[in-house]
Amino acid sequence: MGTKKNDKIILIDADVLSHFISGGQITLIHKIFPYPIKILNKVYVEISRMPGRKREVDNLLNFKLIEQIPFPEDNPEIRKEYHYIKKKLFKGDGESACLAVVRYSKDILASSNLKDTAHYCNLHNISYLTTMDFLCQAVTNGQLFESDCDEFIQRVLKAGSRLPVKKWGEYGCRELDL
Amino acid sequence: MNQLILEKYASNFRAQLGYSNTESIHLKSLLHKLGVLAVFRPLDMALSGIAIKSGDSNHFMLINTARTLGHQHFTICHELYHLFIQEGFDYQVCQVGLFDKKDKEEYNADIFASKFLIPEEGILALVPDTELKKAKVTLATILKIEQYFSCSRRALLNRLFELKLIDKIQKEEYKDNVRASAMNHGYSLKLYEKNEVSEVIGDYGNVARKLFEQDKISETHYYGLLEDIGLDFSTLRNDGDEKE
Image 1 (tube, rainbow over the protein chains, first blue to last red):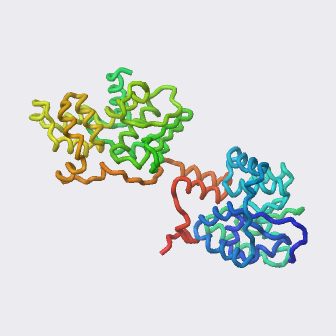
Image 2: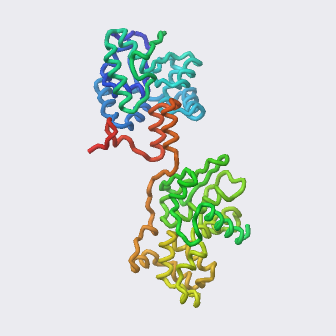
Image 3: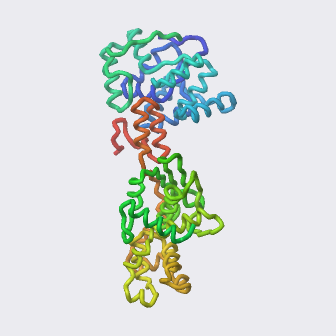
């Protein structure tokens, strides 16, 4: 799938990247949606500290499958929101940074499947994608088969991560409006 | 607070926890038992520790491990006073062992710590009768007591002086060359050294894990919380095993 020629990007957080690394489909991730995938420096720092993740993310960056961008420290609105999310909504550093940035940039967020993240996105009209949304779109695009998704889910769960279902057949894809 | 009252509190607290007044307490086990979230970390400053209490069940202490192990043990007992004995306590940054009467609760905490960590009965049990008769405790006995109760030389000398088991001259004499005196008597120096360890005691990790498993925090946030207490996951491989 080609890249759309508008300025919108997918801002990805560490959990989704980590799922795709565990699931063995990391080289597919940038081909699923027609938007470039970018990672904030704060998220990069976070994922680099997760077990066995740094080298794989470095490879993604080196091969330019995703691009690292700085957190806009000079934007007071975003900085204020970042601190608010971190302290009041009790979110991790990278998640807080992603949420604060997409709130004002109106980019697409790729984040973990948490209720309060979805609630925040709905409240501020932010488009968001979960790991399962990526899988759904990959199936629609013909890039993955159901058996691939089952294997993906098993590998992610075995690595100790959380997903909303244990089998692909249990999941109902939602309609996306990006 | 009257010293006798503090003595009574220290003795009662020991009894409540199932310790006699002659036994040495393994303080880290005690912190587990009391459900205190205790963070041990070397700090680049002179403070000994911090205690914070929130509600009836949330007890936190930070212990500076850039102080000697003996000092750390005294600090734990000092913070236990704030958390479990002092009424209406919320938080305190502490420099312990000063016995400064100007700060009432800090003074009380020092006295309590001294009596709780090194109880009179326990001291008397370790001092030979011949030394008790002359009120002249020898260096060998001092070393035996401080090793048994895992306390600093300073804390023990203050306690012995208070109990009139040593005089001012002896107190001055024994306060120097602490490490050399321990070595000369064949003891390990661990008690007299900074160990600079980073460690957390309590259910912090369990709570973080539970939040992750209940989908209340993300996986990355979970790892971030564990990193905050000094755990380094980057040394693990994808499958969770240690790197070769």
